Length: 89
Image 1 (tube, rainbow, N blue to C red):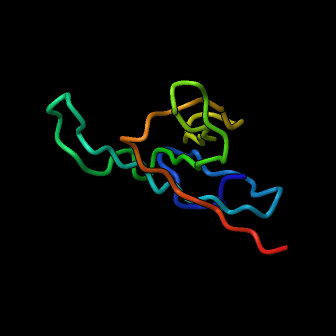
Image 2 (cartoon, rainbow, N blue to C red):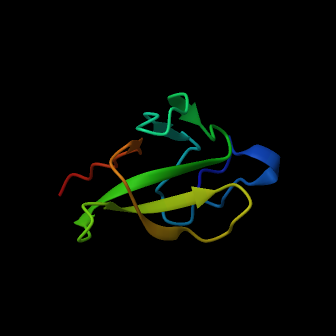
């Protein structure tokens, strides 16, 4: 799913599915923790939102990381920003 170029430390993919995901990073709003808001993980990873939410109102996401071959899936709070992939039928 990862693009053939653009990823950190040799983490490029083969783009076997034609998805061509680039390492866009993620956004964090700082929330109530007082941490600085902004982008992080550019060239290292990226996340894509799904359409499912759990009982805690967290959204399902797919993550791609430079040093991992396969994507991993998790739930994340709404204080983060991920990419969205739109597909035309």
